Structures are given as C-alpha cells and as structure tokens.
Image 1 (tube, rainbow, N blue to C red):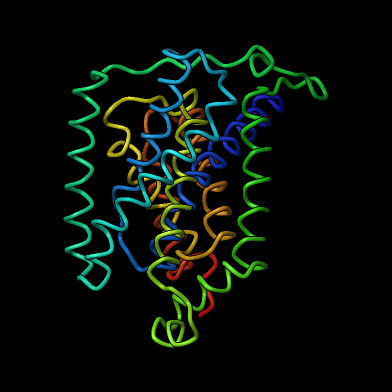
Image 2: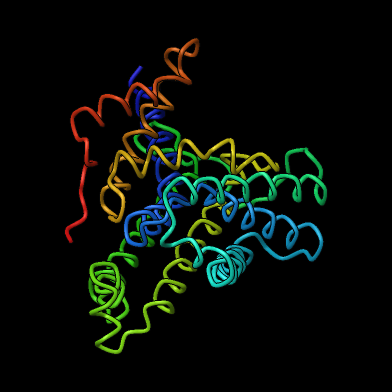
Length: 288
C-alpha cells in the first residue's frame, strides 16, 4: 500500500514537472507580455519532432537532441514573434485567441501532412531506462531525470529573471514600455528574446515529454487545457506559481487516474475549480 502511494506521488511529481517545463513559457508570454498564446503547445510539439527526426534520420543521441530542440523552437518563436505576434500586442484578447487557435489548426494540419497521424517513437539511452530501488520502492530512472532537469531549469530561470540585467529589462519593459524606451531599452527586442526563451522552454519540454506524453499532430490541442490550467492556477508571469500548480495538478491527475479510473480524467478539473475559488488571482501573483 505504501509503495503504491509513493509510486503514485513520484509519478505525479514527474508529470507535474514536465507540465511546468512546458507551461512556464506560457506563463512568461501571458503574464509578462500580456499575450494570450494558445499556440504555445505547437512549440512543444516542434521540439518533439526535432528530437524524433534527429534520432531516427541522423542517429543523434537522445540527450544531444534536447538542446537542439530548445534552439529550434526558440528560433521559430523568435521569427514568428517578429513577423506575426508583434502585430497583435495591442489587439484585444479575442483577436489574440482567434489568431493563436488558428495557428494551432494550421500546425496540426502541417504536422499530419509531413509525419502522418501516428504516434512517434522515442529511443531512450539505456542508462535512462528501468528503475532504481530506494527503501524498497522502485522509482523510474527517466522520471528522476525529468525532475532533476526541472530543478535546474527552475533555478536558471529564477536567476535570469531576478538577478540579471536582461531580467531587469524584461520587468521594466512590462511595467512601463514608454519609460523603458526612454531609458534606452529596445523593448521590441526584449519582447522578442523573451518570447523566444518561452518557446525554447516549450521545445525542450516537448522533447523530454515524448516518452511520457506521447507525440502526434494533435499534441498542441490535446494538452492545451493542461498548460492553461497550470498558468491560471499558478499565476501568470511568475515561476514559483506555475511550478507549485503543476506539481499539485500532476499529483492529483495521476492519483485520480490510478485510484478512481472511471472519473480520473476529471479530477484535475475539479482541483482547478477548487484552487481558483480559493486563489482567484493564482497561487502566486506577479508583483508589478
């Protein structure tokens, strides 16, 4: 009984860590840039397909594909931000939603045309397979790896946003664009790099998540609600909020599907409603 409980808790934390890794970029774009980007999952899917192509066609090791997935998603995000997204920063939320959801369906159609509708395989290195036993409880090595990556990414993002000149420029540009431009900050460039950073994080999460979440052309639509829930519950524009929300929701989602499989898929939505009733502005709100 105890081993099952610990196993569910561990899998929930790993799942939540993966949700956070992908969703934190959406938290940045929604909370710091005030853009409702429902196409955020498309960048995660791009990172996944980059990993698959590099492994299957070029024989690149799995771990080596991950930084390339980050760079590819960040580069595409940078180009799209400069050419399309930038035009809608002052548009209404409805216009932003319609644009980004339209982009989702375009990406789904393009991915289906290129790769087909089937799930894509991932070939993990041998040292990431199997389990290790801790106090008599088997823990998946790959899920431990996921958690470790998220810990490092969270620390790095916190340092970038809070401790670096670039982070100060982001916060200043968000709080007052005119004053920031008057101080010599290139606000458009800051927003482009911020959007690219969020897109790259999604691409990294998409590559890491192939083994857990799967990868097919419907990925951006299938997990869109999950990413939005993490940001809405955690609080847009923060790092700690989505991290806490993702871990909580991951645990409840896995536990619900394990203990009450008949209604397990709805547990995460019930948890979302409860948390939003208790914390309508999110678990941690961004300080202006």
